[in-house]
Image 1 (tube, rainbow, N blue to C red):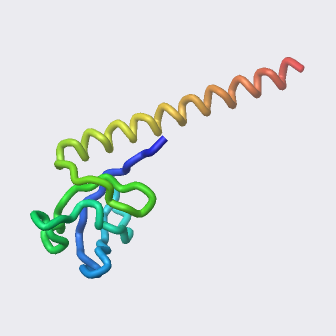
Image 2 (cartoon, rainbow, N blue to C red):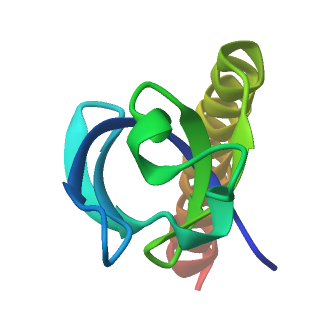
Length: 99
């Protein structure tokens, strides 16, 4: 499964190497933006863009609304995963108590 995390490009670090700083939920990290630039959208024009990031690469540009919706879904999935884990742990404890 390939999961892209939304982030916003806040700074170009090295235009020649196509490296930029991206803010992902308040955490800033450097990513490669080569996949989201072309003649019509050069490196310098990327600041402020929302992108989907996977393993250190900005894979595609998205709009702000899509970024917000994706972040909301990821948050909900995280909450669901925590709930499933709590249920699993609870079931395991019940199973141990019954032994």
